[in-house]
Image (tube, rainbow, N blue to C red; front, side, top):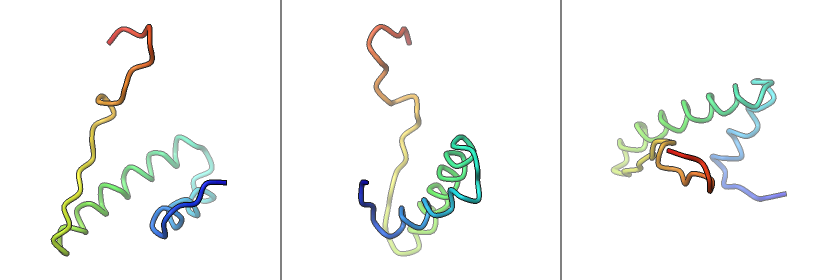
Length: 62
């Protein structure tokens, strides 16, 4: 199994509360956005790219 940092490990532990993978993904995205905002208080700037920037599989029209 892959090893994660403390923040991601904590978030993964919340998966049990979500039930479905889609619910967990929505929770994860919401909490990461919140973390990005909170981190600014410590002069840490993070960015989150929209999913639309992800590489498209070959043969799929944009």
